[in-house]
Amino acid sequence: MATKSFFDFTVKNIKNQDWNLNDLKGKVVLVVNVASKCGFTKQYAGLEELYQKYKDQGFVIVGAPCNQFAGQEPGSEEDIQNFCTLNWNVTFPLTAKLDVNGDNEAPVFKYLKESQPGILGLKRVKWNFEKFLVDREGKVVKRYASTTEPKSIGPEIEKLLASQ
Image (cartoon, rainbow, N blue to C red; front, top):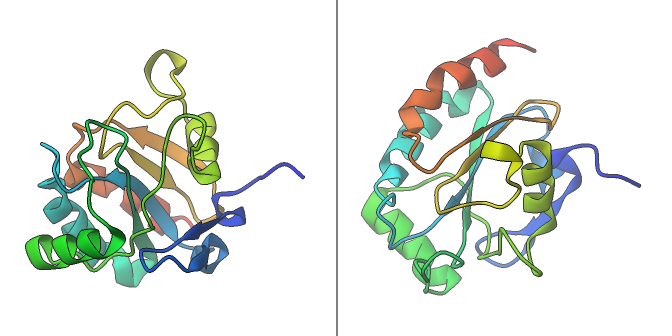
């Protein structure tokens, strides 16, 4: 059966337990491949702000740690969780470390990339902190580059939250 929705996937959470993304069904989701030692790591602050602002309206961020870009996420899941909590007060959920490109790419990222190819139809994720916006039905509606500041996505999130 072809996957029709973001909510059809299961990933490992940061504690390495199965996390059925169907648990998020009906929410607007921003999926971000994150890293602790990247020039964009400061975006954790903006992501957390977005999460705090909209989470009570049915919005969630899923941070997906990835070490595929210049080894910028070298730590264990526990290291990552501690770093995010202590340095950035991150409260949105994180997955276990995963690959977003290549032979071992997480199926959920294959789906995200095929749903919203990047510039010139590129399928691969180019760098850390690339963002995918998913609507309440589990369809990927937009893809944002690493350089996109989280707060600039607010209006798009509000639009999706307003449409039931």
